[in-house]
Length: 362
Ligand code: ATP
Ligand code: MG
Image 1 (cartoon, rainbow, N blue to C red):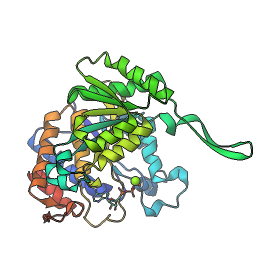
Image 2: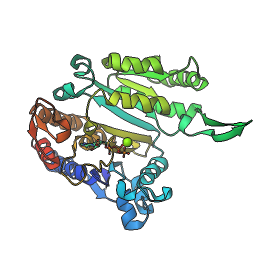
Image 3: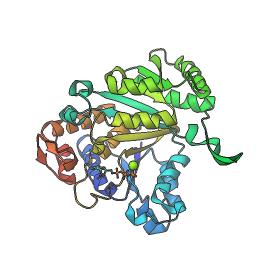
Image 4: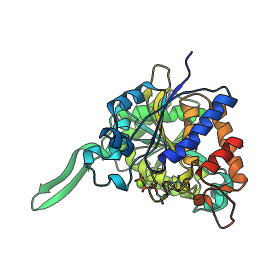
């Protein structure tokens, strides 16, 4: 049997810097755990534009569709700010998401004990927190038609349409239930069924899909209350599933429960492939961070945790993902800190590659 395949797209800015640390981790798994991957690497974003005049070459797109998982660094930077919209670095990422049809966006909010002081909330509210927000990514009010700014009488009107079909709701609900099955078997669906028709349908379809998952404890919450509960007592949740707009807000809100942008991974999943696992793209939540690029300051943990998500959700290696997360926990407990994690209590300052080395060692 051939090894599982992974396409690495480091991209721009700190993307290649943090990805170099992920390569060390991947090599370690190959050497020490007998877990080898067929890794290929390609260009995306500004790097691809510089080489090919397009932010995503057709060959790269084809490779992304053929592999078991894609791991992306970050795209964009000031050098590309004045490019035509059609070849902007971000368009490379958007094309990947669209052609891979990644409708389910997973964003964990996980608090590493050693960093609990970094949260904007009290320590006991976030210590040990481990929740996951599943956001519908390809439909809803950001895409619904009609949309535009229209003339109406003697003034203009800005229009967006919140629109969800049953199948769009069902597929993201299914991916959330599958996730809940692998975690704490608890799912909370958030919408505004009290004031929105799309919310009424959302709730109906989620309940229907849930009949296939009797083991999962399903609850429903209006999204405004959900936002409040998320900052009041986030540990009441395990998996949350919600639409594109609410998910955009709730996942950013949840992100700040845990502190630095340099710590946050994400996954975007699509329909199951022949092997039963979903099409998948993993990437850190942060961008290309041009302000610190080239200075060996970037925190590689968000990208390394994105690889841990790939281990868990694309390669069925949950135990190995836990091993990697435990190593990160250990390194943080030892006080090893990139600049973004350096709080008033101090710590052992390390560069990007120093952090990668410490995690490999742990
Ligand atoms: P994008 O538009 O691509 O989301 P952005 O400009 O909104 O990018 P980032 O590029 O993520 O946001 O940077 C926001 C801030 O967070 C910057 O000051 C950056 O230096 C910091 N930052 C982002 N990622 C990291 C990281 N991995 N380690 C340390 N600092 C980071
Ligand atoms: Mg941003």
